[in-house]
Amino acid sequence: MPELPEAETIARGVHPRVAGRRVQEVQILRPGLLPQGERTFSTRLAGARILKVGRRGKNLVFRLEGGHVLLVNLGMTGRVLVPGPSPSPGNPAPHPPEAGHPGVRLRLDDGTEVVYDDARRFGTLEVLNPGEWRARHRALGPEPLSPGFTAERLTAGLARRRSPIRSWLLDQRRIAGVGNIYANEALWTARVHPLRQAGSLTGPEVARLRRGIRSILRRAIEARGTTLRDYRDADGTRGSFAALLRVYGREGEPCRRCGSSIERIVLSNRSAFLCPRCQPAPREPDAP
DNA sequence: AGTGTATCCTGCAGGC
DNA sequence: TGCCTGCAGGATACAC
Image (cartoon, rainbow, N blue to C red; front, side, top):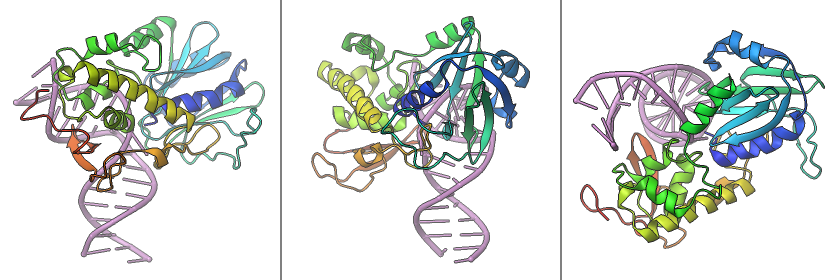
């Protein structure tokens, strides 16, 4: 999906165009995107004023007047498109974003249209009441860019965990917002092999991993995300971080640190990429 | 506890 | 050109 940097970029683009506006009309083209069903979704959303658009992990969070929250999980190919001029000067949207697979359209009281578009339809949209939102919020792990994401907290979370560190990083209950691209990039940065047991990382490795996660995510946000194929921001614009990837999708290409050939392995049915020299494999099943 | 497998879907790249 | 296979930023349910 869209991982944390992509969700952050979309939220920043959508917020100024919808904050303070009221949802006038809800048009549902793909009911399957709404786990709550059309009735609950529409009833809760119609007429509500949008206060703020933010992010929690990989999810977009539209805070509504009255405490309800529109929670959008973008799945693999979800987009939130807001046609029309971008309010931020010097940030032009060259082409109006076109929705190829519109799923939900919102018409706001100033005429603004917000389109949820999703080719594969793995995404979901829900309107949660305050209690439901609290529960969902608590189920997610810490925000890696927040001050609370300390080495101590990371160490405690990893302790005694036997799953491969790459799998641990993808578990949203452990840490919120990291997906397959940035997990692989952070592990390369930290010089930790994806198969290492989470609980086996040494103090210095944990410290490097924490710094690696944070620096990769920050730099990816600066680049407005990674577009491999489908990702677009609210303007329909691509992210530019793909050119800066160190390992993801680079099988057979030289490591940017040591020149070794990047390897691809399969872990939990998903690709993992690593430099065999910079990220030494654990011996046998594992151990540090 | 943790892993492999399958599932939801569509689109696209690559091989032949 | 066209058909077929495999693969994809996610999340979850299941059997083992």
